[in-house]
Amino acid sequence: MHPHVEIEDLETSLERAAEIVAGAERLAVLTGAGVSAESGMRTFRGAGGLWEGEPVQEVATPQGFQRDPARVWRFYNNRRSHLKTVLPNPGHHALAELERRWTSSRFALVTQNIDGLHQAAGSSHVLELHGSLTRIRCSRCDYLRECPEEDLPELPQCPSCGRLLRPDVVWFEEMLPGNIWELAVEAVTACRAFLVIGTSALVYPAAGLIEMAIRLHVPVIEVNPDRTPISNAATLSLHGPSGEVLPKLVALLPPEQSP
Ligand code: BJW
Ligand code: ZN
Image (cartoon, rainbow, N blue to C red):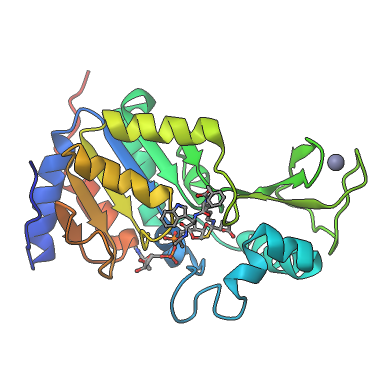
C-alpha cells in the first residue's frame, strides 16, 4: 500500500516523489490541459478556460456539431491557428527526458491533450486518448489525414465523399480510439509509479486510469497547482505548475550510470 501522505513542503514532497520514480521499473504518465498551460494553451474548465465563452455542449459534442458545424469549426480553427504560435514548455521537455531515460519499453505517456506539444518536445510514443488537433477526418466515410499547417475553410468538405469533415478529436459521448485505450490500460496496469499531471480528473474514461492505478496499489504522484478529486487518494500531490515541478523532479533523480 502507498497511503496518501500530507507533506506541506514542496521540496520534501519532491524528494519523496523522486525516490518513488527512481525506484520504479516501469513508469506511466497521464497528462491533461494543465501541462500545456505554461506554453500559453488555455485549459478547459474554470475562469479563463476555453469553455467560458463556448458552452461545452455546443463545441464538444456530436449534437453540437450537427446543430452548428460552422461554430464548432471556428472554435477548432482558432485553436489550430493559436497552436502554430506556441512551443513546448519545460514540463513537456522533462517528460521527454523521462522517456529517454526509461526507454519506450518501460515508459508510457498517455495524454488527454490534442495539441501535439509532447511530440514537439521529443516524446516519441504518445498515446493520444482524445485525438489530435492536427488531424481531420470525414464525418461519414473513412477519409483521414494529417493537416497541421493549412488554414481550413469554415465548412471543409471531404474530397472523397463530399460530406463534412470534422476534427479528429473525441467529443463527449463518443468512444475513445479502442487500440489506444487498450495500450493505456496495459501501461497503467504494468507500471510501478503513475504520474498524473495537469488534469482536473473529471473526464472519464481517462480519469478511470487513475482509479485503476489506486486499486492496483500503484503509487500515484499528482502534479497540479490546485487540488483535484484525486488529491486525497494520490500517494503524493506536488502542488505547483508542472513546468516548474517536473524539471525539479527530473533533476533530483540519481545520475545515469555510464555504460
Ligand atoms: C495545471 C497548470 C500548470 C493549470 N501545471 N497543472 C463515468 C462517470 C461519469 C461520466 C462518464 C463516465 N464515463 C463516461 C462518462 C461521460 C463523459 C464524462 O466523462 N463526463 C464527465 C464530464 C462527467 N465521457 C465521455 O463522454 C467520453 N466517452 C465515453 O465515455 O464514451 C462512452 C459513452 C458512449 C455514449 C454515451 C456515453 C458514454 C469521451 C470524453 C471526451 C472528452 N473530450 C474532451 C474534448 C477533446 C477535444 C478538445 O480538446 O476540444 O477532452 S473534453 C475536455 O476534457 C478535453 C480534455 O482532454 C478533457 C479533460 O480535461 P483536462 O485536461 O483535465 O483539463 P481541465 O481544464 O479540466 O483541467 C486542467 C487542470 O490543469 C486543472 O486541474 C488545473 O488546476 C491544472 N493546471 N495550470 C499543472 N501550470
Ligand atoms: Zn468522406
